[in-house]
Image (cartoon, rainbow, N blue to C red; front, side, top):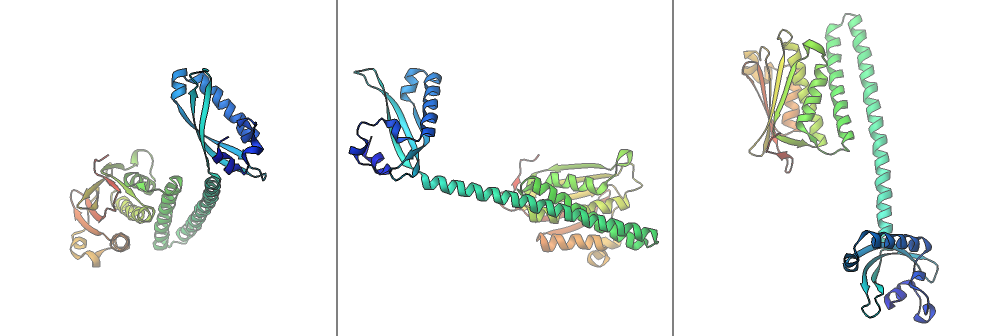
Length: 320
């Protein structure tokens, strides 16, 4: 047994004189190592086996009764005079590293469980809020308060959009989301129409990833645009929506079009003063929360162009 292993385990050479190398391992590690050696002998040609190097994690008992975890790097050699196979190995104490890794794994697991619980509670709370709003919406309709009913319906749609984004983010462990996938889910959820009357949706362009904060903001913007389309494209057969995602000059360029009647000229001229609550909400989110810009236009229907900064590493300009 080498002097370094003796120092590691706390023994003197006289105390281990004559003991086999196997005595330097715990029973569990010895059995594991014997099985590994057998598998290696069977799995490799002899010449390759003698040239191979292996790294194993084994437990070694110390004189004081403690057990240290070691990383053993070994190479199998052949004694040319006797033909016997020998093992030459180097042991390194990794007990503290293993403890740190176990602590990190335990911490990560605790955080995972906590995050799952938080996600579950948020989903339930959003569902409860939507349920309450829906009940109030029905009551307002029954009482003939059409203005209140419509306002509550819009609020419910916005909460639903936040729930959709939360579900996507929690399902992806809060990693950045593909913008095109986010847009599809939000618009399809906002349409909520099945069968022949379902609007046609096309999303194309560059692949862009969006972090959680901007995902919520963009989802609300897209939901308002889709809601506006449904209000004004009821007579179109079919109603069509096309969204293009581009990246220009360090900015994400999001172009939303529908084949409706377009924006009133007075709204395009007056802009800020002529915009309704939905468009004012969009402007506020784009300019304040996203630090971007918003442009309205008519081009065979309504056209909205949104620009915001492309954070480093988010976009793949090869397209999708």
